[in-house]
Amino acid sequence: MRRLTNSLIALILLVLASSCDDKNPQPKPRGYFRIDLPDKQYVALDTMRYYSFEYPTYSTITPDYHSLQEKDWVNVEFPRFKGTIHISYKQVNDNLGEYLEDAYFMITKHIGKATGIRDSVIINKEKNVYGLMYYLDGEGVASPLQFYLTDSTEHFMRGSLYFNVVPNNDSLQPVIDFITDDVRHLINTLEWK
Image (cartoon, rainbow, N blue to C red):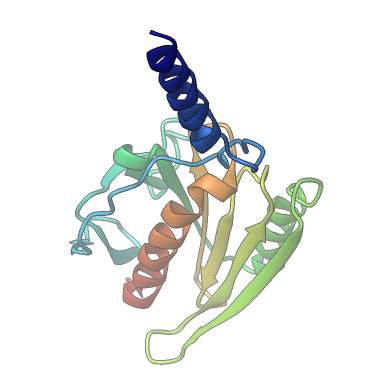
């Protein structure tokens, strides 16, 4: 009996000793859910009076319900990502400077949260489309992407991407990058009427 007890104690000590680890337990880093992104496919929006462009098939075009009097303002909504590109349009009547100042003002509203603002010049001489695209970096930036486009004589369009979630651009970055490609496609296919 004593021999069985000693063997049992030795076995328990052996199991305890082999299960102990010298490392301290470490919490796992915070992770985010995997986001499945759809295949890129586009369709033309050619029902507007002054412009046309292509937008993704996984988005929908809706009127801007906050500015119903502005018939040429639309939203490109991404329901799957809870994101919207708000597009406004104005005709230029010797007031391009005013529109450019407004676009710049809308960018500067995000300076408090932005850790950086990068811009990219847009020049498409063939389609007479010129402008700037702004990338706003920072975890709490409400609008990570904004742009404006013009032909400098008749047309002015401004767009901004917003998400209907608390801004956490670290977790949203794959979606921001994905929609940024869609904005580039929209810009490349834009034609004035």
